[in-house]
Amino acid sequence: AAGKYSEIDRLDPRGEFAGEAEVRGLREAARVAAAVEEERRFVEETLAAAGKLQSERKWTEALGAVEQGLDRYPQNSRLTQIAQPLRDRVEVERRRSSMERHRTLIRQEVQGGEWKRAEAALQKARTEFPGDRVFDDLAGQVQSGLYEAGWREIETRVKKHLAAHAVSL
Picture 1 (cartoon, rainbow, N blue to C red):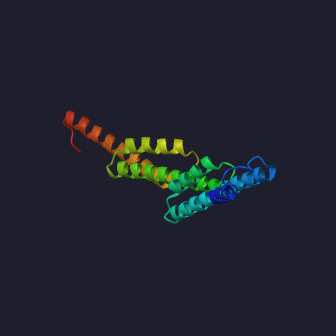
Picture 2: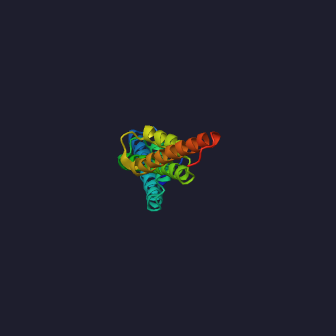
Picture 3: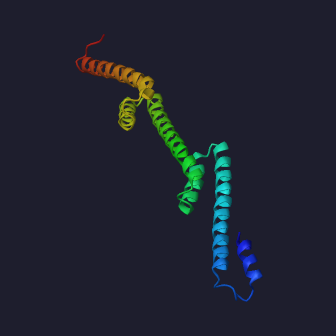
């Protein structure tokens, strides 16, 4: 696009017609055409890069590429149209990932028999995702584990009490 501007300079190398309205108009048209072409090229490259990242399921990186494009050309409708679905996708992935981290932590505590810690982790997860039923299966395991642990604790205290008083079962 800068080539169009240089073509005008080649036609008037000494600038003797630079003050002419028609020459000024041609120069301005060449500048506008260069800017439009540069934006089109940049947007195409940005969308191609974002598309490749999307095909690799790299949602955050794809959104980053589009947002860089929007930083440069904030009014570009093609970039704007692709940005919001990507933002939504990134949020969905962030939410899914966070839920899975919570579930993993709760399962680790359950497997270790750390029922109080599992209960605390479950409460933290439910605070972050109120009303979401994704933790219901783990909640059942935690409640069962707490119930069983409570009975074992009672059994242990009764046995200690009986042993302290030399009573056998």
